[in-house]
Image 1: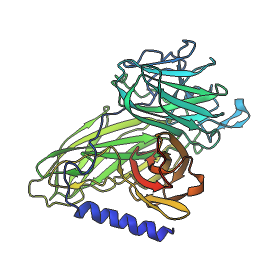
Image 2: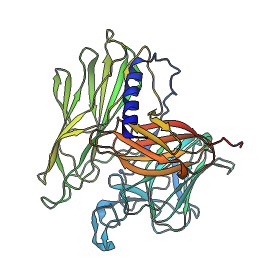
Image 3: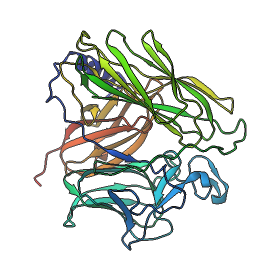
Length: 442
């Protein structure tokens, strides 16, 4: 199955989103999920039960700890140099903070104290094979995912488990305690700790050696359709993933003034401001973005005009201009592409649609909504509910991902598979289904 076929399918999907009559039953309702980034703790501090709603221990009762790669104590992050560990850093992290069990052995355990979770997801960087298993309160297994060794790949391979019964706890086991966890996501009732203030005196960097890397993720709620006269929320997450300081980032969000009006803007910290509003665009300046994961969240409330036509895309990609103290920068960085359109009613979905096509040898999949050159995690849920990590791929310079999996590599029997892709910068998640082989009775 060639790239041209999938490109045609992507075009068809865009037209379909505009043309189909949208109803409240078109897609599933969106659930509330919380992400723990572990950026808010001090290096070496105990996590344990400090985050209300969740507890981190091991099978011997020992606590987990916060890790911070900026301390220089860890063999991370890949691909930077770690001279204390003999060369290139081995472990991957998202940002600078992560969770780990310290020097303790045993099996990692995460308890959901309110027993309300039906979803668990997290990224792992590991030297050995890991098994992540969710359990009910009666100790019966609800689902399991295996993570293969992935050091020096730059990947955080994700384990994703969705269940119909409440998850009481999750166990993480391997042949050796040489792994870390980052960006944990759950729908359990969890109270996030406050984000720390950016450092007053950021670490010194060597000029010309440590460039910044600013990325922008955009989400829109509702994320499929918004009815005329209704209010929607646009969330921009701006992150500096490089090792140098970005002096300023200028964000430009284009919109049609005959479709949308901007009501207000909120920022996660002082110093961020709207520099221009009008002529079908809003410009926002962030000020300094410090190295190693400094993040700003911008929330815009917008109203779809009553007279707006049905089937019109609400917003386009956000443009980001930035420079850094290493004389580097980008004047054409673009975000992912939200697909929401105007519709008769508000509609949201847990995931966006992923184009999936199967032939005799491969299952091909693709989408054009990712950020240009964005790394993308890929996995599939087997007919028996077990999630299998595939790879971390990368979108092209237009934000398009087109890839395929050989059918002979599928790890299960016949039935319906759910193929999932998730942008690592944007966190946009897409899914599609396909049938392979002959379903087996369970």
